[in-house]
Image 1 (cartoon, rainbow, N blue to C red):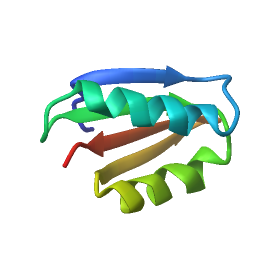
Image 2: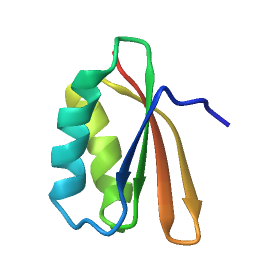
Image 3: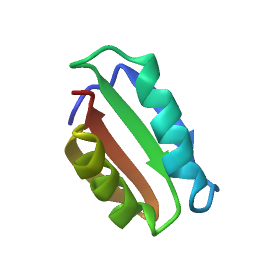
Length: 76
């Protein structure tokens, strides 16, 4: 399991709020650090990898824990 420097809890939020919060929160960590994002919106499973591609950040791992999605993103 990846160790995160910061956790962003987006559980209960619907599109586009998880991505809006992710975009704002990634700016709070240093390059090379890892952000863990928690979400329950099924659309996040598609949106987060696309956001990472678009922004150049690295999606390290995605874990589905019974409807709670954990995304580990390394800031580039």
